[in-house]
Length: 287
Image (tube, rainbow, N blue to C red):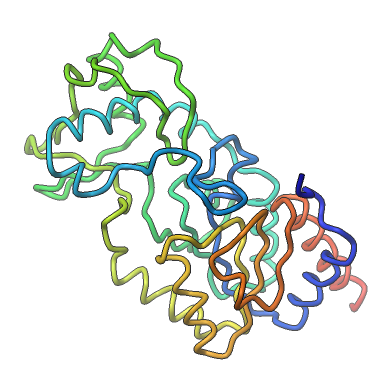
């Protein structure tokens, strides 16, 4: 079993890394939100813990695909919508207030960084908090859509399913064929969660903003990500090309293990809390 608390040596190494590189480009993944009750995608070896999530092609390709997505989303939304930031999210708020980040970039769509108080977060994959009309572009509040979904799909309303990452659940049912899918209240068009599905490209403006922040940083810190998805891994590649060291705080394998200057295998919350407290103490002691 892997440690949750960082060892004294690992904690010291992380502190030293941050002290030597005071302007950090921080990239977070699903592992930072598991302490908030949101399941991750992968296990400690970087393998899927579930069937792969829906692709853009499956969502756009058929009404049945959209029925399956929205039915599972209706069941998974309560957990995602009510999740609260944990100590790791709050520690990054404190790190930001110390002026130690050029950017906080997340692969997550749960909005927990913002709920904790972080500002200017670059959400590579968008946010579950809203849905967008693919026809007219109107934005719809996801919490409001939940009432519509539940009122029109009573046959699934009381189903209890095992939560999965990003507001999904582990559940299949022939009842999906009768599921009523929400449409745009403005034009009747297709509604899609305002997130980047697998098979979809991250908007260029987000990538460019994040890359500019990486160029302005001294180093990169990965928190709670296996980096198996290229949208996050590429920043490690770019960091290497820019001559910037990369450290990772993650339980288990990452795609970038071979290029890391430092790897700390510990829980995100205890490691970040210890790091930030030590940084604050060091700053106070030097005054």
